[in-house]
Amino acid sequence: MKTKRAISIGVAIWFLAVFAFTLSFYIPLLEDYELQANLVVGLVLIPLTWFGAHLYYRAEQKSPGLKIGLAMLLTGVILDATVTVPLLVIPAGGSYYQFFTDISFWIIAILYLSVVSLYHRIKMSKA
Image 1 (cartoon, one colour):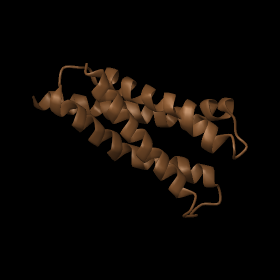
Image 2 (cartoon, rainbow, N blue to C red):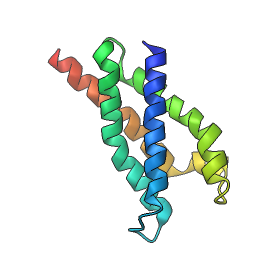
Image 3 (cartoon, rainbow, N blue to C red):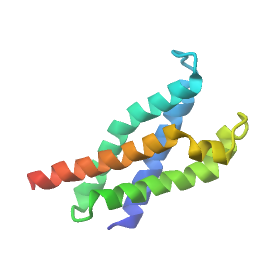
Image 4 (cartoon, rainbow, N blue to C red):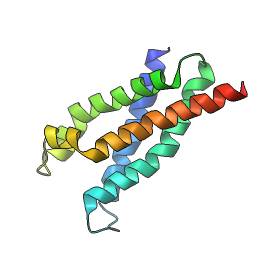
């Protein structure tokens, strides 16, 4: 596994997902802004992680999708803990506990892992 590559792709995905999350608050479509932001992240995350997996597997194809997905996801979780929660969640009245126990967080995490694993499975079946 190329750890630096997985981490750098995870950082890029995290950055774009947080950008989409933040931007979604400025385009009100639903009354529940938090639900709207989580839906936007979920929808944006599918092509982002697919493309991230594509970038990773262009150079290295032997690592299991779940392993790469975990590396990229853990990068995002660490960035959430050190940047997103202190700068975006806590000032809005949230907490670490609230952020990391929210069902939306876990659905998004499972989606992330699933997309990377699916990409790997599809790519390996063609090889």
